[in-house]
Amino acid sequence: MASSAFNWDEEKARERRIVERRERVEERLRLQRTKQGKRALVGGKCMPTSPPLMLNSRPLCHRAAGGSSSPQPAEQAAPARGNEQAARSASTVAELHAAAAAQVEAVRAGAEQRTEVHRDACDAEEAALRDEVAAEAEASRHENRAIDLQWEHLQAVAAPQELHAGILAVNAHCGRMLEAKDRTLAAARALLARRDDQYTRLLQLQVRGGFAVGMGWGLS
Image (tube, rainbow, N blue to C red; front, side, top):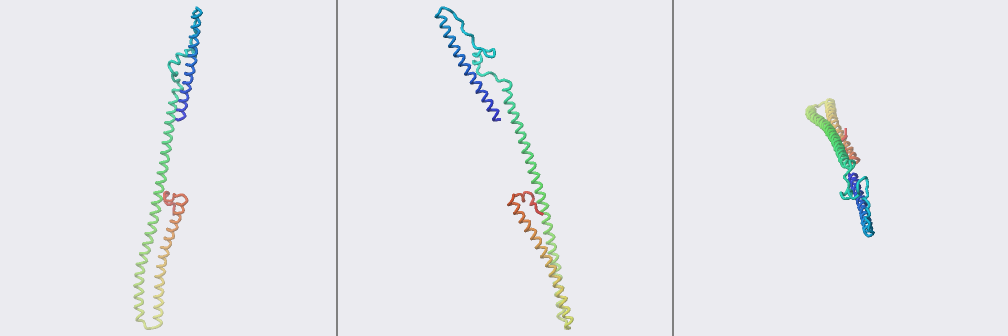
Protein backbone atom coordinates (compact mmCIF):
# COMPACT_ATOMS: atom_id res chain seq x y z
CA MET A 1 0.00 0.00 0.00
CA ALA A 2 2.85 2.42 0.91
CA SER A 3 4.75 1.44 -2.24
CA SER A 4 1.69 2.23 -4.40
CA ALA A 5 1.34 5.69 -2.80
CA PHE A 6 5.05 6.37 -3.33
CA ASN A 7 4.90 5.42 -7.01
CA TRP A 8 1.86 7.66 -7.50
CA ASP A 9 3.63 10.66 -5.90
CA GLU A 10 6.72 10.03 -8.00
CA GLU A 11 4.60 9.95 -11.17
CA LYS A 12 2.94 13.25 -10.27
CA ALA A 13 6.34 14.86 -9.59
CA ARG A 14 7.65 13.63 -12.95
CA GLU A 15 4.63 15.15 -14.72
CA ARG A 16 5.20 18.48 -12.94
CA ARG A 17 8.83 18.52 -14.07
CA ILE A 18 7.76 17.83 -17.66
CA VAL A 19 5.20 20.66 -17.53
CA GLU A 20 7.77 23.09 -16.11
CA ARG A 21 10.26 22.12 -18.79
CA ARG A 22 7.63 22.71 -21.50
CA GLU A 23 6.77 26.09 -20.02
CA ARG A 24 10.43 27.14 -20.14
CA VAL A 25 10.68 26.01 -23.79
CA GLU A 26 7.50 27.91 -24.68
CA GLU A 27 8.78 31.03 -22.91
CA ARG A 28 12.01 30.91 -24.94
CA LEU A 29 10.03 30.41 -28.15
CA ARG A 30 7.74 33.34 -27.26
CA LEU A 31 10.73 35.59 -26.64
CA GLN A 32 12.28 34.42 -29.87
CA ARG A 33 9.07 35.17 -31.82
CA THR A 34 8.87 38.61 -30.19
CA LYS A 35 12.40 39.43 -31.24
CA GLN A 36 11.74 38.22 -34.78
CA GLY A 37 8.60 40.36 -34.98
CA LYS A 38 10.52 43.43 -33.85
CA ARG A 39 13.22 42.83 -36.44
CA ALA A 40 10.56 42.42 -39.14
CA LEU A 41 8.94 45.74 -38.18
CA VAL A 42 12.29 47.52 -38.21
CA GLY A 43 13.11 46.16 -41.67
CA GLY A 44 9.69 47.18 -43.04
CA LYS A 45 8.63 43.69 -43.52
CA CYS A 46 6.05 41.60 -41.74
CA MET A 47 7.72 38.29 -41.06
CA PRO A 48 5.58 35.45 -39.89
CA THR A 49 6.26 34.20 -36.45
CA SER A 50 6.97 30.58 -35.79
CA PRO A 51 3.96 28.42 -35.03
CA PRO A 52 3.70 27.00 -31.51
CA LEU A 53 5.70 23.87 -30.92
CA MET A 54 3.47 20.80 -31.23
CA LEU A 55 3.87 17.61 -29.28
CA ASN A 56 1.52 14.71 -29.83
CA SER A 57 -0.49 16.93 -32.25
CA ARG A 58 -1.30 19.37 -29.43
CA PRO A 59 0.34 22.76 -28.71
CA LEU A 60 2.57 22.84 -25.67
CA CYS A 61 0.87 26.01 -24.52
CA HIS A 62 -2.47 24.22 -24.46
CA ARG A 63 -1.04 21.33 -22.44
CA ALA A 64 0.71 23.68 -20.06
CA ALA A 65 -2.32 25.90 -19.59
CA GLY A 66 -4.36 23.06 -18.17
CA GLY A 67 -1.62 21.89 -15.78
CA SER A 68 -0.91 18.17 -15.74
CA SER A 69 -2.61 15.91 -18.21
CA SER A 70 -5.62 13.89 -17.11
CA PRO A 71 -4.75 10.52 -15.50
CA GLN A 72 -4.50 7.64 -17.90
CA PRO A 73 -6.51 4.44 -17.32
CA ALA A 74 -3.42 2.68 -15.90
CA GLU A 75 -2.92 5.55 -13.44
CA GLN A 76 -6.55 5.41 -12.40
CA ALA A 77 -6.32 1.65 -11.91
CA ALA A 78 -3.32 1.91 -9.55
CA PRO A 79 -5.29 3.06 -6.47
CA ALA A 80 -7.98 0.47 -7.21
CA ARG A 81 -5.36 -2.28 -7.33
CA GLY A 82 -3.87 -1.01 -4.08
CA ASN A 83 -7.25 -1.03 -2.36
CA GLU A 84 -7.95 -4.53 -3.64
CA GLN A 85 -4.59 -5.77 -2.39
CA ALA A 86 -5.18 -4.14 1.00
CA ALA A 87 -8.59 -5.81 1.24
CA ARG A 88 -7.08 -9.20 0.39
CA SER A 89 -4.34 -8.71 2.98
CA ALA A 90 -6.88 -7.74 5.64
CA SER A 91 -8.98 -10.80 4.78
CA THR A 92 -5.93 -13.06 5.01
CA VAL A 93 -4.95 -11.60 8.37
CA ALA A 94 -8.50 -12.07 9.65
CA GLU A 95 -8.52 -15.71 8.49
CA LEU A 96 -5.15 -16.39 10.15
CA HIS A 97 -6.34 -14.72 13.35
CA ALA A 98 -9.51 -16.83 13.36
CA ALA A 99 -7.52 -20.03 12.72
CA ALA A 100 -5.08 -19.20 15.53
CA ALA A 101 -7.95 -18.44 17.90
CA ALA A 102 -9.57 -21.77 17.00
CA GLN A 103 -6.31 -23.61 17.67
CA VAL A 104 -5.88 -21.87 21.02
CA GLU A 105 -9.46 -22.73 21.96
CA ALA A 106 -8.90 -26.37 20.98
CA VAL A 107 -5.73 -26.55 23.08
CA ARG A 108 -7.49 -24.90 26.02
CA ALA A 109 -10.47 -27.28 25.78
CA GLY A 110 -8.16 -30.29 25.56
CA ALA A 111 -6.15 -29.05 28.54
CA GLU A 112 -9.30 -28.55 30.59
CA GLN A 113 -10.50 -32.06 29.71
CA ARG A 114 -7.15 -33.63 30.64
CA THR A 115 -7.07 -31.63 33.87
CA GLU A 116 -10.56 -32.83 34.74
CA VAL A 117 -9.62 -36.47 34.03
CA HIS A 118 -6.45 -36.13 36.11
CA ARG A 119 -8.36 -34.52 38.99
CA ASP A 120 -11.01 -37.26 38.91
CA ALA A 121 -8.30 -39.94 39.00
CA CYS A 122 -6.61 -38.25 41.97
CA ASP A 123 -9.93 -37.91 43.79
CA ALA A 124 -10.72 -41.58 43.16
CA GLU A 125 -7.29 -42.64 44.48
CA GLU A 126 -7.65 -40.54 47.60
CA ALA A 127 -11.22 -41.73 48.19
CA ALA A 128 -10.07 -45.36 47.93
CA LEU A 129 -7.28 -44.70 50.44
CA ARG A 130 -9.71 -43.02 52.84
CA ASP A 131 -12.02 -46.03 52.59
CA GLU A 132 -9.10 -48.36 53.24
CA VAL A 133 -7.97 -46.35 56.28
CA ALA A 134 -11.54 -46.25 57.62
CA ALA A 135 -11.96 -50.00 57.12
CA GLU A 136 -8.63 -50.70 58.82
CA ALA A 137 -9.56 -48.46 61.74
CA GLU A 138 -12.87 -50.28 62.18
CA ALA A 139 -11.16 -53.68 61.93
CA SER A 140 -8.49 -52.54 64.39
CA ARG A 141 -11.17 -51.51 66.89
CA HIS A 142 -12.70 -54.99 66.75
CA GLU A 143 -9.27 -56.64 66.97
CA ASN A 144 -8.38 -54.59 70.02
CA ARG A 145 -11.62 -55.63 71.68
CA ALA A 146 -10.90 -59.28 70.88
CA ILE A 147 -7.37 -59.01 72.29
CA ASP A 148 -8.70 -57.40 75.45
CA LEU A 149 -11.12 -60.32 75.90
CA GLN A 150 -8.33 -62.83 75.28
CA TRP A 151 -6.09 -61.14 77.82
CA GLU A 152 -8.88 -61.04 80.40
CA HIS A 153 -9.38 -64.74 79.90
CA LEU A 154 -5.67 -65.43 80.40
CA GLN A 155 -5.81 -63.67 83.78
CA ALA A 156 -7.84 -66.58 85.10
CA VAL A 157 -5.66 -69.34 83.58
CA ALA A 158 -3.49 -71.10 86.11
CA ALA A 159 -1.88 -73.86 84.01
CA PRO A 160 1.46 -72.75 82.62
CA GLN A 161 1.06 -74.56 79.32
CA GLU A 162 -2.40 -73.09 78.71
CA LEU A 163 -1.17 -69.62 79.73
CA HIS A 164 1.78 -69.89 77.35
CA ALA A 165 -0.47 -70.96 74.46
CA GLY A 166 -2.85 -68.09 75.21
CA ILE A 167 -0.04 -65.56 75.24
CA LEU A 168 1.20 -66.90 71.88
CA ALA A 169 -2.33 -66.53 70.45
CA VAL A 170 -2.61 -62.94 71.68
CA ASN A 171 0.84 -62.19 70.26
CA ALA A 172 -0.18 -63.60 66.83
CA HIS A 173 -3.40 -61.62 66.97
CA CYS A 174 -1.47 -58.41 67.65
CA GLY A 175 0.93 -59.27 64.80
CA ARG A 176 -1.92 -59.63 62.32
CA MET A 177 -3.37 -56.30 63.43
CA LEU A 178 0.00 -54.56 63.06
CA GLU A 179 0.45 -56.06 59.57
CA ALA A 180 -2.92 -54.62 58.51
CA LYS A 181 -1.85 -51.20 59.82
CA ASP A 182 1.47 -51.51 57.96
CA ARG A 183 -0.37 -52.24 54.69
CA THR A 184 -2.53 -49.15 55.18
CA LEU A 185 0.54 -47.01 55.94
CA ALA A 186 2.32 -48.42 52.86
CA ALA A 187 -0.65 -47.48 50.66
CA ALA A 188 -0.64 -43.95 52.11
CA ARG A 189 3.13 -43.63 51.57
CA ALA A 190 2.78 -44.87 47.95
CA LEU A 191 0.11 -42.28 47.24
CA LEU A 192 2.22 -39.50 48.76
CA ALA A 193 5.22 -40.67 46.71
CA ARG A 194 3.14 -40.50 43.50
CA ARG A 195 1.93 -37.02 44.38
CA ASP A 196 5.49 -35.92 45.13
CA ASP A 197 6.72 -37.37 41.82
CA GLN A 198 3.90 -35.63 39.93
CA TYR A 199 4.68 -32.31 41.61
CA THR A 200 8.41 -32.65 40.82
CA ARG A 201 7.69 -33.43 37.16
CA LEU A 202 5.30 -30.47 37.02
CA LEU A 203 7.99 -28.11 38.30
CA GLN A 204 10.50 -29.49 35.76
CA LEU A 205 8.03 -28.99 32.91
CA GLN A 206 7.32 -25.43 34.06
CA VAL A 207 11.05 -24.65 34.17
CA ARG A 208 11.59 -26.06 30.65
CA GLY A 209 8.56 -24.55 28.95
CA GLY A 210 5.80 -23.54 31.30
CA PHE A 211 3.23 -25.69 29.48
CA ALA A 212 2.38 -28.22 32.16
CA VAL A 213 -0.51 -26.36 33.70
CA GLY A 214 -1.82 -25.11 30.37
CA MET A 215 -1.68 -28.59 28.86
CA GLY A 216 -3.61 -30.23 31.68
CA TRP A 217 -0.55 -31.20 33.78
CA GLY A 218 0.55 -33.87 31.27
CA LEU A 219 1.02 -36.22 34.25
CA SER A 220 -0.31 -39.68 34.85
